[in-house]
Amino acid sequence: HLSVATVSISLCGYYCDAGDLHAAVRVAEAGLRAVTDQRLIGTDEHLRLAATLMSAYYELGDLLHCAAWAEQLMSIAQDNDSRAGQAAVYWNAAYVAEAQGQAIQAVRLCDRALALMTEQGTVRDLPRLRMNAAWFMLRADPGRAQEAANILDQSLSDLQDLGSPVDLAIWESTRSLADLLLNRP
Image (cartoon, rainbow, N blue to C red; front, side):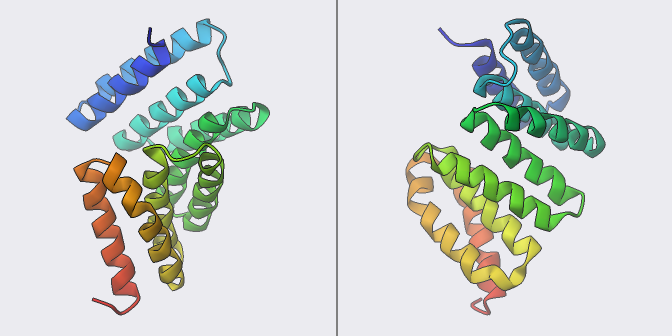
């Protein structure tokens, strides 16, 4: 048995990966309506699905909608004790903040997501989130390149075990940026 939220999150991700962003939004919105009808607002399932929908809107370039959605979801997340849901919301809100030129806020949001996700142990998302945290850090404050490199190095073995080839390529690119900023081309 799979929950509506789990299926919707997966389908939304597959549609995003395939480039059909409008289908991704439709699937996530339908799933969100079903989760709402089931009175699951504020649960991990609800917040993870809502964060996935935010990500699809982000990919569509609808940053205004994303920013408003992020504020609403962060408020719901803070009112509920759902660590995975909160982490997903903060993680995706970090992308929105960075896209709006708020690099410092993106780092803060990513740090909050990382703290929440670290409590849950190693899962595929944890090394990916560490990689994103390092990237946001490099964008916000290039002077923290060594710290970002350390975070990246910490995530590599888990990414090799749990990540995809795309994850590893992004890691290589981000690590290369850190090395360039550290004058180690």
